[in-house]
Image (cartoon, rainbow, N blue to C red; front, top):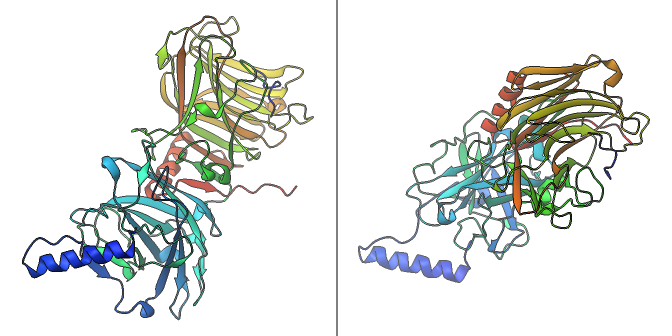
Length: 483
């Protein structure tokens, strides 16, 4: 369907002194030790090769922990950031799974990796840690130089409020940068800064997350990747990574019903990052009671090359009566539907059909002009409920659509992209055939784009697996022309 209608803790020091005093008295009496044991990275803080400075941008309780970290090179030699690892210690609430993301850094969030590890026998304030690393493209620090601030977020995957009050590395009073011994740093696998809690995975290089592991390679040029590790539609990282939630007027579907309420990032056991993007449609059968969802890039990143996403299509509502003409779509489209160089490439899945055509069906469509309805399309009468890798390859004058490595349709040079396009995920209703409450959910595991090259599905999945293994949640090395 044409999109022409789119508009486009540390706890306080006094409390810590009390805890240490109680621990000392307990040891003196031959009793149980209440405080964790530590391993310092240096004999003297002044002799450390690195210093980690910290500040918090969030209160003790909230949707996310927001530590900002800064690495300073105290040594007399240049240090490659790819040889540096940091550990931020925290205590998991209610055994919840956790996620993280990078919000802002002069190094580029594409060059920051993050993994979450678990400690055993470390005490109640440091059951887990967020391990930060850097790719080979992050550069190096000359003697005396700083990485500048690295803004991070740590959050529960169930999106409940977290409590940092008893997290080892958290300090509510550190709202301005100051050296923090509660964050450990490693250089070339050696513990050089901060206090390590004693635990089975605390010593440098031990446990599932090694600080001696080879650094992640520099992200390839012309690549965009996102595994959708976000807290919600208002996550600052979502905007800084080039995404925006549609809230404007217009169609398609039930006009003027686009809402942020349907965009979320729930836990997802089969997803690479443990969570996915969810686009939810809700309706009571009236236009006023309908909410549609769409997430799109804020800039036209896609032109030619390979665009792919792992998408979950729903054949039935999550709740309520079935029968809606739901449209679950993944597409690229010109920012201006009146452009002389208009381009659009679509996947649209309709489990119950639409516009008089029966379902289930998957429409693959290449557009040249939306106002003149100039397009070529092919419908696949396939039932596709579940996860699928959707691929659009636009190279050498032709566009090919593939699902799970199976080619479905190829359009010729007349319908080849003529200008850059925004990337969209959308879920909407063609019409409202009946009254009654119902909810539909479409999900997305990851997005991958390689500019200017044809990449087979197997190679796309290999690249995504590599990003996941490295702890890379987001990459964007796509060069946009200067405006």
